[in-house]
Length: 249
Image (cartoon, one colour):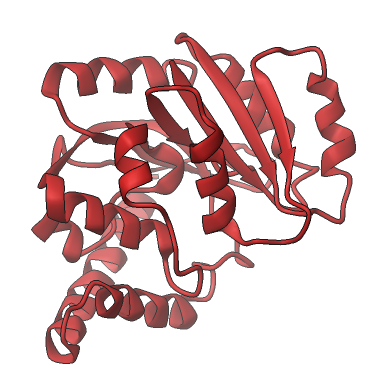
């Protein structure tokens, strides 16, 4: 079974779209919505799923941050696989089926997919960012091609490498630690993730995001000089990635 972990904070406007896209998946699953002490109507909106046995709603008593919320979901999950989904993103209906099949055939512990950018209402833009079929640790150091909402991973591996350090890109740090041990991840180039780029999110402010990326390298134990070198590669690859997506749209 796949356990879908959805951290939510003041997500009343988008949470149903995310949950509904998970319910459409053609694999046995459960959905764990971790409400990080929202102050909006997220809890009220989630009552829509009160009779849906596959949906579990867990609310943090206080705001813990996205890493702790995801970790809580992983710890409470019953599935062998964990899929992360942010509350403002959604999936194509065959995403998990394709990923699970690929992981079982390759033996990889982590799988990601391509993504299509969508607007605030979830409308597709035609701007697509693919991924390679195989991603190595060294490749990942040069740019984070693994989007969190596209990930399917073994629960045992996520328990081994829980997320932390919300002050930087906590998901990027997690993927790097996983690939440093397990060497590779597999990817599906198709845009099975519909991804909303928020200007108010952690990656919305590019200068702030750049500083967080540098901190990821430092948390990995990489020296300052090498960290600066990796950072410039990261920045250049990021510019190319989005420029290519916008040219094709």
